[in-house]
Length: 313
Image (tube, rainbow, N blue to C red):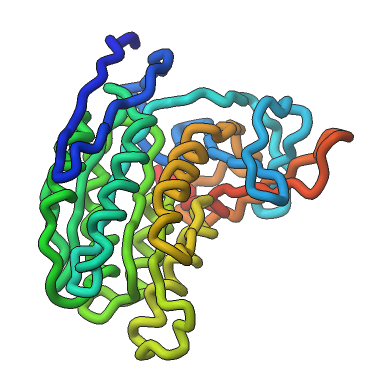
């Protein structure tokens, strides 16, 4: 599928440029169900991000250096690519009162993130304070997201868990195969109706990758127990889904972290295999991906979703 590459500028409050980068259009597969681990009648596809010990991305590794096991049984890799495929991304933006002095830098970070987008990507925005609200449904126009973020007026407490749940519900309308949510927040949860366990279960069933920029207190032990649960859950969900939680030490780091998340999402290997276990029992399958580093590299790290639920039909 081809599309024209268009640039646009959203002025926002600070005249920040939100032009998408120029790149070759990627393909979509509109007849396939969108998922981070995609399962059809005979294929499982897993996005994998590989880094050096310093966090820099490793690209151009051959298929032969990857090994995949499912429930301890080695699987034959039948498809392998590193395409810059289109993304469906949900931005979850903390608009609680404690974000008052952080909105400007956070909106600039959002602008940086959107610079890697093109017309095949789609986005939505969930703002959360006393309760979460879907303020911008799915749109290819990232400037609409940025303009909304630029005019947020922070107030109230933080319903982080409810926001994640709402995002997963809306993500079911995604058009693209690859999906992720990106969270910008400065605290834990002190307002949600959904529990951490409910959110973890929903994430496991949804096959959505989670990234987060956490502007947390340096010593979370000083926070009430309910607010400590937020950072802990984000770290756990990011690890399980192949994403990453980045703790922000200073607001000036937000731009670089935002760009790094965007680059990671667009430099993943997608490994496909037909499961050796054909039983459709709906049970959870544990997946492990290993990389044999080439001689010039060592201590490589892999980030990927740790498993999926088998189909039942």
